Length: 462
Ligand code: ADP
Image (cartoon, rainbow, N blue to C red):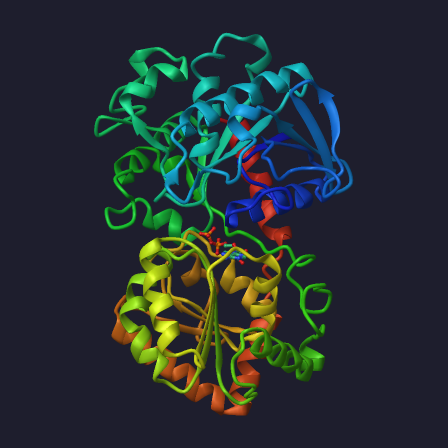
């Protein structure tokens, strides 16, 4: 099959979250399954030589290659993409995001024709590329080149919908009749994610549990009704993990590589992390790690409520993340009070993330909701035991055999579970058992990619 993956961030070129991991790893695995894949994304300011090997195709299109021969095409437009940040800056979302991503979507469809890539499948991700299926069934509906293309739309997080004022609708260039409650309108606003759901042939999300959850009022963020109408076409496929990046045996960022057979070297990484974090070098102290966006979704509301109590427990904690200013302030204040307990790193830092996955004992991920979550998969690969709330992809991947799971989203339950983890950590035999189970898991992309191929086939047969 010919497959075009359209995503606004792709590892290794640009990343703010799990979407980039997926958009970078799935194509590699699809190629190994003999599929013909290309990727199309915006060319942001940071995508430059010599960091990446980039070639020019046209005045406004360049490309790089990943895998054996997967071309990653970059849509260039200095006005829209040559700036710091992908979707916004400290002050919030960029004001011209609708212009930016509608431009990207249209240019993507034009590019397919220019390079004569007759895609069987266009696989779009999240609101930033949701306009592609919308344009296909509106602006391009009669254009012969695009006739047999089927679209898959993956929702990575239904909390981010691409909402814009209805005054911006005319900029999309499609007939105003599409601004109605069955299509792009959502409480008097333009909702691009909703459009993606309505106009794509198949919709999926990144874990089976989350695909069911988003069809409920509690998790649907107002789109549960639209999804219910498409029930027959909604699927869930768990994300895989790219073990060429997230592997303690080969990780170039960590001070000492290790494996299940050589676990004592994991503790060299713990020492290294304690040193970097300027925390007391105590090998027997349970060391908790967090690598996360600082957002309510990631559990920071109950975590902020519980943090004082947590700091009085027998543990150390390193936090790496950026996000809501509110949590920056709360955590900055708490670290002033407990500098020997917490290390706070308010930034995006890939290298430090690797060191945390390797060097900590327990990975804290109490997300309120979690479409799939990569942190828990990564941490398990490093023998760092995840502590999670039972929701979405966390419920699908972590069990009591390889982690700690709590099922009431309350700060008391979080604290209780942290306490349970601390006690378990002190029981060396039990802890080793948890590490073994965690590291023996296999969340590779191979199985997930096969499921995507079946989904593509399903779309083609519609
Ligand atoms: P999200 O909802 O943010 O996509 P995921 O768990 O699916 O959450 O993926 C998050 C990815 O981003 C993981 O690879 C994680 O290690 C990485 N990440 C998150 N915050 C940071 C940070 N501050 N620095 C480095 N990596 C980060």
